[in-house]
Amino acid sequence: MRKSFLPHLGLILVGLLFLGPFAWLVLTSLKTKSEIFAIPIVWVPETIQWSNYVDATQMIPFVRYTLNTLFICFFSILGQLIASPLVAYALARMKFKGRNFIFFLMMGTMILPFQVTMIPLYVLFNKMGMLDTYWPLILPNFFGSAFYIFMLRQFFLSIPFELTESAKIDGASEFRIYWQIILPLSRPALYTVALFTFLASWGDFLGPLIYLNDPEKWTLSVGLRSFIGEYTVEWGMLMAASTLFTVPIIVLYFFVQRQFIQGITLTGFK
Image (cartoon, rainbow, N blue to C red; front, top):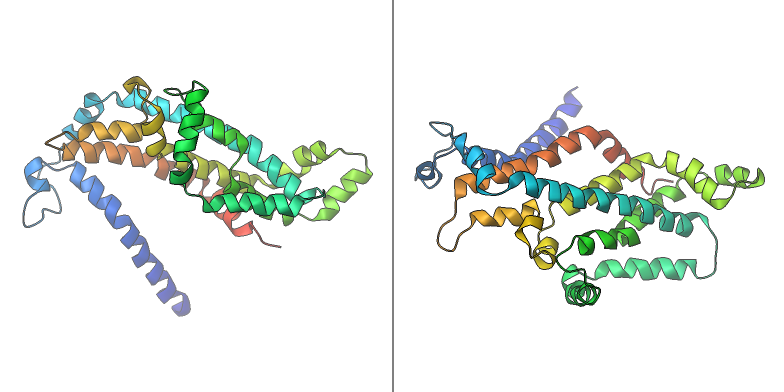
């Protein structure tokens, strides 16, 4: 008990340190304008301003932006769960000439930041007539992601090869082995991929800002910019909307934290 006290105390302090910015976000969303800029700092609002939340959802089409964001998140997750496991299975469990070269070439693409490929991708989607649509934000996910493929490949390698070899002896095809053996055993890793994809799509700002021109198609991350005017910023409403923007991520993590931690822990374990 004594040996575990100090490590747990350290983890609690670190957890409180990470919780600090979110607590400040929530407290600021409940303050008046004078309290937000008051010196000395007003830590706890004297009168809770729940009206900031009401005004924030009325100033912008909050529900519309939320549905747009969820639409992109759903199909992005669907695309990654279709493409990434298939590629990872081929690189992990199938033997063919050039497999290692393809794997290292794919890993090399992780070095390229989005800023390098941003303009070529914009030109490509412009020539395909997909600007001001959700296709540029969804379609790339159906070609997989190098990071997710790498993570799933490492997980697939940890599954005993005896399982697939015995299935081949019984006459199972590669796709049947993949669908009925590998995927059911890889649920923690798939949950992790789905969560990472959701977080990336939910918080993406640059992509929707570049490709979406119609305000009716904006996502929440772009819609929050509406609180920032040319001369003033509605800080109370901005903090309230940012809190509502953050809550779904926290709720989702609490629902899938066990599978997420298991997927991260077991990836690469052999």
